Amino acid sequence: MDRVGTRELAYFVAVAEELHFGRAAARLGMAQPPLSRAIRQLEQRLGAELLIRNSRGVRLTEAGEVLLHEGRKALDAVEAAVRRAQRAGQVERRLVVVMKPGGDAGLLGGILEAYQGDPDALPVDVEICGIAQQAGFLRDGRADVALLHAPYDDLSGFDTEELLTQRAVAVLPRTHRLARRRSLHLADLADEILPRWPGMSGNGPEVRDTAQLMQLIVLGRMVAVLPESVRHTLRSELVAVPVLDGQLTHVVLAWPERSRSRAVAAFVRAAVAVAEEGSAVAMSAGS
Image (cartoon, rainbow, N blue to C red; front, side, top):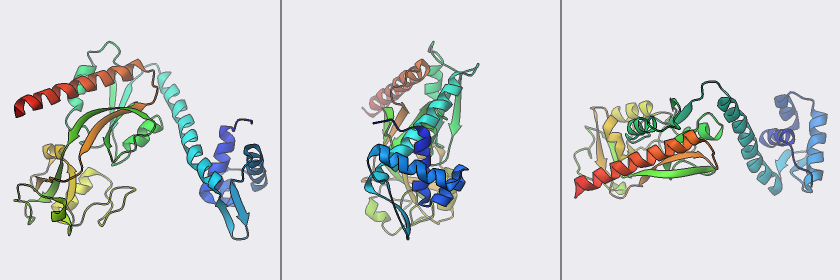
């Protein structure tokens, strides 16, 4: 079977997302007839029907759903490869680390200090992104490494090292009825309004960034269950109460699978060493 090229994939993904040949053609900047022919030829080469066309419009077959899912990933991978190659060819190469605000659990300063002592280290740029955007920066080649959080972030397609596990705390206004409790259970928050994270369900407003989230909590519009490291950056109007049965959060360092970058490998070594040192200090203090 002949290979499917990126142009054909881009044509198909446009049609599959628009479910309309005219809109897809306009999006691609081409006429509709050649686009229709290209999709027909793709189906013939694959030996599978991808789209069902009738008077009610266009819809995907099961094979089409699979190709849309995999095709998006393939196109993203090609775009990321191009961006990484362009960055690698720059005269002054740099390592880009991406995280959301407070997403390093206080580790990044120590990691950067340790990293700069490695002979394979590059100058580092730290990109601070919005909530749930870190994995996207890493996938599309804008970043070399990312600090992610399991189980919330999608780790597929990455190599990873777990750095730290955090317990959950409820962030509440100091005037909240539960603010003086020494600990809570999730059931205690059953009647509270909780934030709706991007791409996830929830009973409260969608939050786009940490500043917005904290302001809404201060105003009494919601409460939030967050990793315990949030204590270090809490506003004076807020308190953090341990949630005994809350979801554990794992701070994870992620980078593209099968990376051959010596600079990335050096950063991973530094991160693991700093995390292990911090864990040893915490265990010593607790004994």
